Length: 529
Image (cartoon, rainbow, N blue to C red; front, side, top):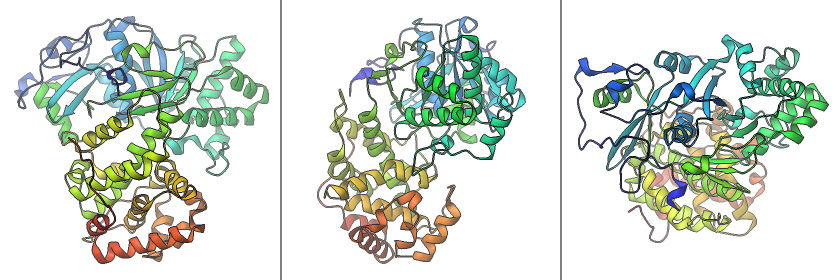
C-alpha cells in the first residue's frame, strides 16, 4: 500500500503536513487547568493553536459546494478531513461542506454554537495528535426548514452530494435490488416541496435544477455496501420514476453516481473521552471525534459537475472501485463481524482485547489468508499481504479500543454484505470455508443474547426480535435461522453447511468458543508486528 493512499495528516517523518503548524505529540497526557479550557469557536482559535493544529485558511472564503446527508463521527473523521486538507494546503477553496441531518438535531446542537468547528484526535500506540477541522461551513436540521435544504441543493454552487445513511437507508429490496417505497416515501411523493427522506430532497432538488437549466450535482455514496453508487442510483432513479418518468430518465442520463470505498476505524466518542480531550488540549468541544491514523478513500472517476481535486490529498480515483470494495468489505468488515461476535461470546469488550488473545488473533489471520484472499481479485496498486498486515495492526491498536457492540450492530445487513458472499462463493467453488462457518456460528450463538458466562449481550438489529426467536428456538440446530431467506438466501439448502454449523454450535456449548476456535484453526498464523 503506497503512502499516497493514506490521508497525509502527517508527513512520513512525523511532522505536520504543509499548511499546518507543527504541534508535537505529547509524550504523556497533559492536564490543563480548568481556567485554561476554552470553548471552540472561530474567536477562540488563537487560544488553541499552541496545543493542537487549527485552520490557517480563511473559512469565510470557502465555497459551499458539497452537501452531506447524515453527519456522524465517521464522516467527520474521514471525508471532511480530505476536504479540510484541500483548504489547508491552499489547493482549493471551492469545496466547502454543508451538513444536513434528517432524524436528530443533536449534531446541529453540538456544532452550531462552535461555528461548525470540531476536533479530531488521531490515536496510535505511539501517541496522539489533534487538529481542529474548519471546512464545514454550515449545518441544517432538515425538519426545521425543508425549504432551506432544497434551496441549498438547488444552488448552482452545489456540485456534489455525499451520503452516509447506512445500507438500510437505501430502501432497496434485498432480493430484487429495486427501490421499495414505504409510507415516508409515499408522503414525499404527495408533498414534494416538504420532503422527509433523503431521496425526496435529492429528487425534488434535481427536478428544480433540471427546470432551471442547471447541471446536476454528483451523488457519492460513502456507505459500506456492494456497489454503493449503483445502490444510490437505484434509489434516486426509483423514487423519481414513481413521480415522473421524464425526470427519472433525465437523472439516469445526467447524474453521476460514482461508487466509493471508504475506510477509517472511528469508534463512538464517549462523555469520558470528551472530558479527556478538554483536559489534554484545553478545548471544550461538544462532540470531538476519536480515530486511528489510517484513512483510505477510493472513488470511481465519474462526476456530473467536475470532481474535487481530492487526489492531491491522498484519494485514489479509479475506473472501477469493485476490487477495492471487495478487498475492504471481505477482509476488514467481515473480520470485524467475525471478531465482534466471537469476542463478545468470550467476554471481551473491545477489539484490541480480542487481538491480544492469540487464539482469536490467529483465527482472523488464517481466515483472511486461507479462506478470503483466494476469492478476491487483486486491486490494482495494492499489496494484499501488506494490507492484511496493516489490518491486524489496526485491529490491535489499544489507543482506539474499538468497542465490540459497535461491530455487532445490524448483523442482518452486515453479514449478507460482508461475510456471507465469501461463504457462498467458497461453497460454489469447492474451496475451504470452515473458518467462515465459525463466524456464522458465532453470530447464531450471539443472537441468543448472552455470552458464555450468561451475561446479557446487546442485539441491535432491525430484525432482532425475529432472529433471536429463531436462534433460541433452534439452539444448536441452525435450520430455523437459515429459513430467514431475506438474510441467508439459499444457504440453508446446503446439507454439509447445515451439518457443520450444527457441529460448531454444539462445540461452542461443550468446549467453549476459544476451545472450538483453537481446534478448528490449523497451522501458524501471521500475527501483527
